[in-house]
Length: 147
Image (tube, rainbow, N blue to C red; front, side):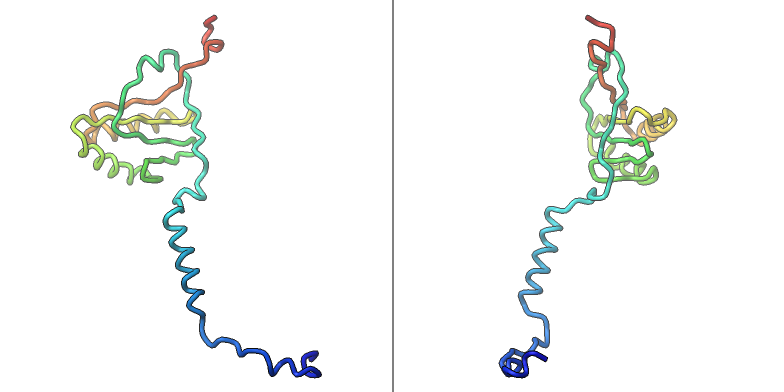
């Protein structure tokens, strides 16, 4: 070994027997950082919902008390996170009890099957929602045939 001629090995400090306190502090700070700034949607797909275009969509706009987003792949997102249909039923039941006149906005992507939208709206009415609105965009003036 190269340290033997100069006897450097005798001057080295011994390896610590246990972890340093600073190691635990750093680990704790990293965990707190991820708990505060982390998200349960880190690996979830982006919310690129392309709403269907319907003439007169703005005229039928109304205020709602809560909303959900439905992806093409069948994933259902609430403000509290992703839900399955069974979990959505419980979520709707809870939200319907929170207000006097509960109404739901369904932001279904353009390619979501109509059977899925009607299933969700039926579930909402069954759980006490008074009004269910399906979101749509107003077509652009050039697409709608207007000057």
